[in-house]
Image (cartoon, rainbow, N blue to C red; front, side):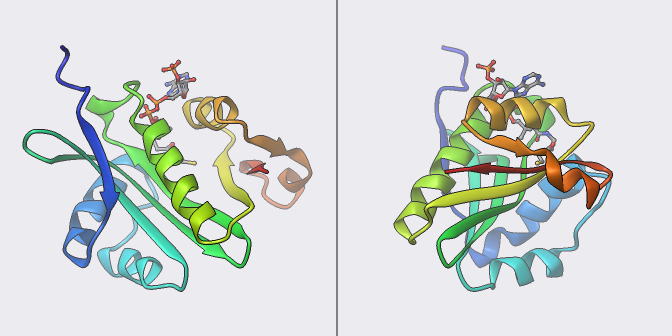
Length: 148
Ligand SMILES: CC(C)(COP(=O)(O)OP(=O)(O)OC[C@H]1O[C@@H](n2cnc3c(N)ncnc32)[C@H](O)[C@@H]1OP(=O)(O)O)[C@@H](O)C(=O)NCCC(=O)NCCS
């Protein structure tokens, strides 16, 4: 037992928005405010997930996404640094996809930074392919990754 077997993913509630914001702020240089996260969480079709490590429900990751008609979009995903490479990113992605399909999504898209090999590998392993055409529009990005 490593103590990392029992990580649970659940839909975030309004009370979790500060937790999600603090995870976002420690993972990205482009820090989002709690209000910005609340706005995203309030959008039609929004799905916000929180990963917690048992037994104390320590927050270890989140995913913010949305289903728009039949397409799911991942707006943000991060796992706390100390909790990485334990399958939590994959767990969040799978939970999101399951819920998104339940809401009518048939494909999923996201944007991934050029200098983020961990994220690129995560999405690649999950079956996403990068649409290089969009790098012309987003020079700092590897492109939109999509999965059908
Ligand atoms: C990207 C991120 C969410 C991955 O989360 P994670 O919980 O560490 O990922 P997982 O443990 O589920 O990894 C799943 C697979 O992704 C790939 N992967 C993840 N991190 C990797 C790394 N640092 N290097 C190479 N491959 C990596 C591997 O294929 C891995 O499978 P394996 O461990 O069986 O080899 C995490 O690194 C993170 O929060 N990064 C900072 C924020 C960020 O870049 N978010 C993505 C924005 S699009």
